[in-house]
Every structure is written in C-alpha cells, then in structure tokens.
Image 1 (cartoon, rainbow, N blue to C red):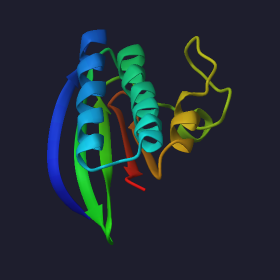
Image 2 (image 1 turned 30 degrees about the vertical axis):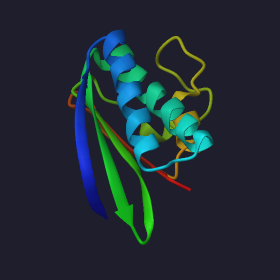
Image 3 (image 1 turned 135 degrees about the vertical axis):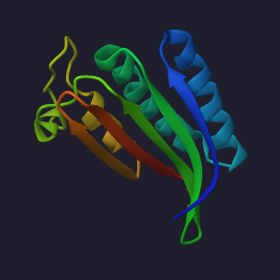
Image 4 (image 1 turned 30 degrees about the horizontal axis):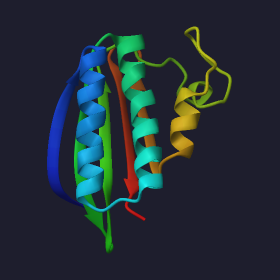
Amino acid sequence: MISLSKDTIKIKSEQDMVLFRQRLREYAQKIGMSVVNQTKLITASSELARNILAYAGEGKATIEVVSERLQTGIKVIFEDSGPGIADVNKAMQDGFSTGKSLGLGLPGAKRLVNFFDVQSKVGHGTTVTIIRWKR
C-alpha cells in the first residue's frame, strides 16, 4: 500500500471533531469519492473520534490517502493513550458497552468501511485503523 499524503489532527474537544470531519471530507472529495462513500467514511470516523473523547479524553487521528492495486482510498488511524479495551471481541458485538451507550459504535463503524482493525492494551490505549476505498 502506498501512502500519497498524510495529515494528523489532535482530538481533544468537540471543536477538534468539527475540524477533523471537515478535513476528512476535503480529502475524500479530493480523490473523487462518491457522496455515499464519503458519508459512510465520515460517519464511521466520527464515531471512532467520539470514542477517543468519551473513553480516553484525547488522542489523534491520522488521515492518509492510500493506493493499492489500482484502488485509491482514505485510511484513518485513531490513536489514544486511554484505559484500553479489556475484551476487543466483546466490544465488537452489537449491544456491548462499558459506557452509557447502545453499544453499536465499534461494530457499526466496522460495517461502514472496507477495512477495520482494533489493537488495544489495557492501561496503554487503543489504535483503530479503517480504510474506505473510493469505489
């Protein structure tokens, strides 16, 4: 996979969320991603960025334009140094939540993208990587 461009945004407040979503939309539009796929990417990314605020307090999101086998897309890496996820498999099940939510965030975000990976270590933080291809 080739990285064509990259941008990192700190996620510490709701204002950062607005900037992050705007920047993500700009990248998606720049590569000619359809409106439907832009919406899927931004919805999934918003949920994951919101998880950073809710569970870790702060973190960062790195937006990359990537290319692989004649496909172009957007890769977003969400990183925090929060408490981590004790059981990633449980966290990926619909309805499971350690907070006061419906427990649809992680599995819902996964359904909206083409690639989804969660790496987490209790006490050290969580990294979620997603990719949405242009088409």
